[in-house]
Length: 185
Image (tube, rainbow, N blue to C red; front, side, top):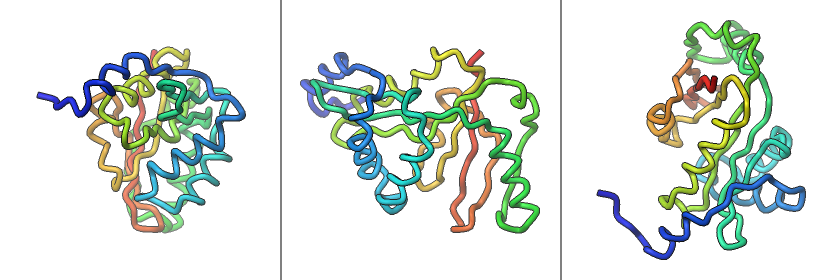
């Protein structure tokens, strides 16, 4: 049985709204990402990478009582480009593991890349992450894919949701990275 940490917070989660990201939201969202992912990487690197890689017009924020409590950062980077790069780097000896299932079917499909889904720690376990996670289901894309660091310890959550592990590799910092994909049509 799930423990309700705060009935007020739990009850308010029903009112959490998923909204488009406005230009003025970007700095705050990047700070939220840096805070939520600080245990994984340097906050400045997180903000720098996500600030450049995110297509803000596709991304969504989660707002509760006027406060941004989370976001799902997205772009349209095709999975096959990234996987082709990984295979090339593996052949060059820059990845120690590169085990990918057949991904050829995605070459002709329209895909969405989930860069980061974050919720402030004090608002986790109230349904905000699930609301954000469901956003791509209704955006009209053929599939969504993402990369998941093993240190995040959330690959089981993503596979339970319907993501399939397409492959994994070990990067140059000896971190295992899973590549997941989910067909949306």
